[in-house]
Image (cartoon, rainbow, N blue to C red):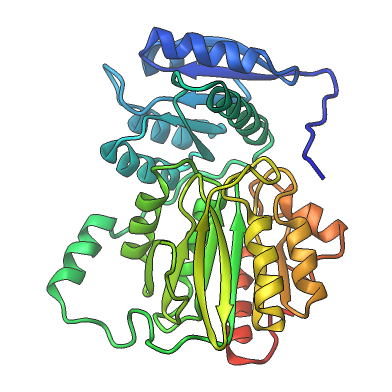
Length: 369
């Protein structure tokens, strides 16, 4: 089933904030091409954007990070403190930009897209599709202000480097019998963080597909690795799937699970988008159903569309434990809703109860079933 947006006649209004006139023009053309969306205006910096917001509230803001007079991250924090609105970060693929992006997601941004650039016809079509899909999802998101944290990622990473290794931290040398597969999209970066922070260093093996552009998943993994007790990193082809380790699918590549005897490993592959996404949650879930059966748990978190719903159903049919996030705690109740309606989710849980269910599954008591 391919996701098709509903359209009731009312268009969602998008405000574009970027200091580049060419980026504002290209984004405006892309967004205006969608019948569900309209560009209510553009602004070259946050001050001009604030004036426009004072006159009329947009449904979605597309926000650059590096701008004159006030950077986008500072502006985002002001928005979330004063009048929370759905904000999509529109960023370049740079190391500095990926670090700032992680701070923006923690501050309350609901999603990220890469700035449109010239390329092949296929690339431009994919970029147009992803930008419009992201704008529609953000317009329907439940916005929650970002959390203030007592400890910044950099401080924790520095402290970890100075201290002896924590007992149990890092992957075991023995392959696990049970593997947890998590899929998420809009709102998923913070949902994943909340789940992982509630798990111990000796957690079950976890593999994750989070819809995120190429170039940002490595920074996302590094951020989680600094916040969480277990080891978190971007997956590589051939990686063993081990306890105490979380592997995140690289942007723009599909991730699957392969098994030979008692050992499971990661397969990273190219291929067309599935359910409009690469990486696709369905691709990972289906490989788990085929390779692991009842030795897997599938968890579908917040996100727009239907990616993961069919794969989760296939996992349940092969005996896997399956969970969908509930509507109240989801930023966008699209993917979980599709899974629930198809009978794919054996349990529907609020976000705070998902980590305990994972631990019950790991202990063999079937808590995620």
